Length: 232
Image (cartoon, rainbow, N blue to C red; front, side, top):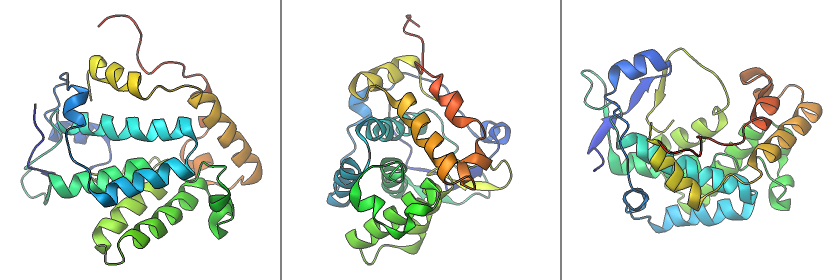
């Protein structure tokens, strides 16, 4: 199993045309393969920052998102679609790592995050602002396209936007999922996210998640397992 050299830089937001452009064939991808991609100092710095700001269960969620995304890329993500610009895998991986690892920075009890002026905003915007400043500190010369893709993806990740395009930074077998879950278990994630969102809806009734995913806190609280524990 290998990763494509390039993939479509932009894909449909709607799942039906997305699948029409993909060749996804869920296949087992070993965790060792997903972890075989080297991480440079900038990516490692984002991981360290995320562990400092993000609550432990939500940090594990971020790591799972990263690994699940790589599994999808290895299983037929749209590539070489006529008329669609391509993005090299190396550049996509950099954007993907930053986006997934940093996407829930706004769900935090970390004093340095709660003291930030953006704390009164929706957590996606708050987290996006933290990510923006973090990435600019790491690399003052970061390409605007990379910075914009990462931050915009974080700021809009709870919105349901069926029209238009999304970037490649925005299906795996049960065996792959279970292997990842053994390393990064969900723990009390459902209850913790439900509590975060419940408090947010009281304190910030105009927050984005209330419009983008109504009833989300109750739905997420009901999730106990991502996949059945029975054999495939």
